[in-house]
Structures are given as C-alpha cells and as structure tokens.
Image (cartoon, rainbow, N blue to C red; front, side):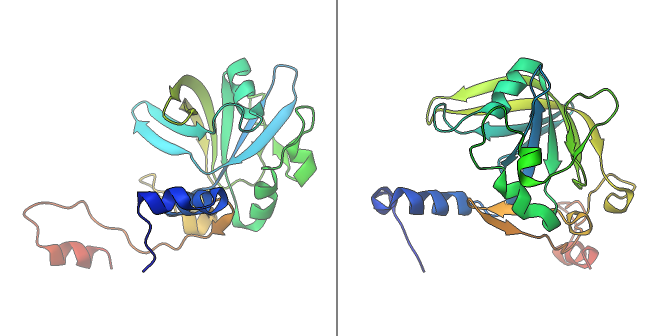
Length: 216
C-alpha cells in the first residue's frame, strides 16, 4: 500500500503533490462556467470544484485558485455582471472542455477557440454551452476569501435549471449515467458515471437486510 505522512508529502515534487491531493477526494463534478463581461465578451472555463451548499435557498459554490496564480477572467466577469452559468461536461466533448484550461487572452473567446457552441436562453445575456446535459443559471451572492491558502469560495444562488427529460425522474433525481455527464479526478483525468443503486432512507429500527434489498 502506498503511504505518505506529512513529512513525506512535503518532500514530494510540486507536480506529484498536486496530482495526489487533487485525486484523493475521488471523482468530482466536471463543469464549464460561462460568463460575459458588460461589453458582451464571452468566456468559458473548466472547473472541478463546484459544490452543493444548500437547497433552500438553492446555493452552489466553487473555489477559485489563489489570486495571481492564474488569470481570473471568470471571476472578473462575475464581479462585473453578477451572473454566470454552470454547464455540466458531456463525455463526448470532454476534450474540448479540458482545453478551456489554457491561458487565453481576455479578448479571446474559449467557445470559438476550442469549438464549443453557445446557446442563449430567454433574457440571459450569458451563453450556456450548447448540448451541456445540465445547464444552471446562477446569480452571485457572496465570495469568501480563505486566508489559509489564498483561495476564494464563490457562492451563487440557482436561478433556473435545464435538464433533458430523459435524465430526470418525477421526484427530481438526475441520472448522470443517462445524461453522459463527465467527472474529473485530479487535474486531467475524466470519468463516466455508472448508476449502481437507489437506497431507501435509512431508519434506525429497520433491519439492514431490508435496506439492502431495497437497492436491488
């Protein structure tokens, strides 16, 4: 079994540390966050840090790398306009999504550079990624700086959600396998999802065997 204590982790190369620590949490959601500035310049960038923060109100967050580490066109646009879209990555074009991580100029649209199509909805001036299996319109509500490492947690409230009919059931559960959503592990590993089971809500007085049988 591979093993690293804190001292061993500190002695690893920066590249190996980044790959290891980014992988140990398992598969994370792969998303493209699309934004626009006030002049209509569109931007889209890959993120694997989108997290659920609450359902009432519906809040999602994502983490920005430390200031100065990379250009932050996405965040600049969010601060300027207050809105952005989260687009799940489809397995068929995960390569294009990953390519948005390149350092493009502010005046260069990643949509055009990597060959992703834009799709506009209603009165939202920010484009969605066409054919994204899950599309979420967001409103920025708060940013929290994390002094420990210089990162920023960006929090937004869900304004609207778009999902193809075949990927959602009557109770609102999404089937990521049917939607062919891609997940991310580490910096550049992309994975598909396989639905294993649906478990009933556990009850303290219910035998474990009943819970397991309910998943079949």
